[in-house]
Image (cartoon, rainbow, N blue to C red; front, side, top):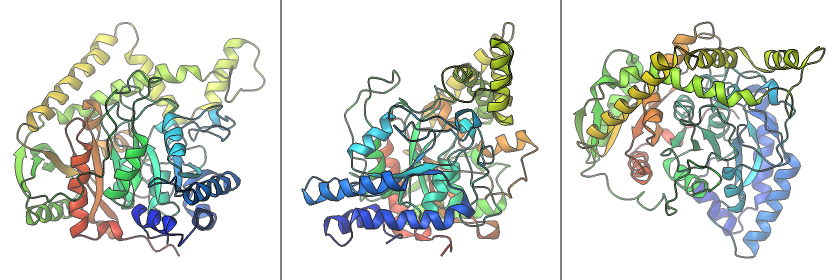
Length: 484
């Protein structure tokens, strides 16, 4: 049962072959067994999950079920959940229980999904390895001495380890796609504005976007169809008709034009990753797609632009965490100012402090024009490069990450090397485009390699179709780690 797709699970629930309570208990049992090793979950809600499962069974019996009704789900711990702790993997919010649900949470509640818990992450979504967390690192599902990828590493591991069949994440610079690649699952970040950010604790507001994890593109299509939708409470939410992202999955790939950016295939990608990516592209040619060389000349500037813009926005967004209204408050202060200082010093981890300091600096008088304004101009150039490329192709393909998962602690003392792991994903966020990672092979130490697909604005259905066609012809997405 734990190896079944969402479609198979929905059919089993509808056919009364299994109840939601039974399915939920199986997932909770697996979490209880594996989480002490993998550390994918921060909070597990046994009682709430079983209550939701019983309600789902009643809904199914009444003939009022949708495709996700009764199926267990995990949320990244950046989404506010009413009555359940939302920590952002930070000491600052270790004791915070949200009084309301994020839009994504309420959407999936309405769809009948069963929330089993909240997953580990890099603190305030700042990181590429899931090591920057107050609760200890999440471990890769395939090899436990390796990183899970970040910042949504807990959600990726939860799906890869078959703790849950689906999970949510957020992607600011690759934080859904990169951990999906490193754990051999499928993950999609939609166009900016397709998924509401209401109730999603902000890191960088112009870059953050909710995303979906599943075993396959079909699973992600079902989950994203339920998550997406206009929300008037989010000023960046786009008012457009709801979509069924499964609608084009079975269309053939013949005639599809895949763009291969020269910049993605230059130096920087490990040889083992290159072999897997080349083999995946060859498979697409076998399936009837054609490839064309395209150029993204400003892609090399994505990392410096991102690490000006994102910390600047983080500096502003995280100023609200001051120990006054909610969150961690230090003891032993002697003035309001010292309470602020001590609470923030104790509540935030090292990487969060680093990004707040960088962001405050680039926004300060005398540096705004030199750094922040220039980074925003580069952002526009990067978006224009993508639009020129899409005049020649339908989707763009390349690696998700330059390497497979590295050893825990290997890059912790070198923030720049850690930042470079997002070299292929960050430009997508700067441009606001949809991106997807799907498993396409293995590299060193038999660790998963992810192929990244990038689409034009609101072209999620085509991205998912492109991934699904590949997955119908290969079995990489069916493989799972041997965890018992």
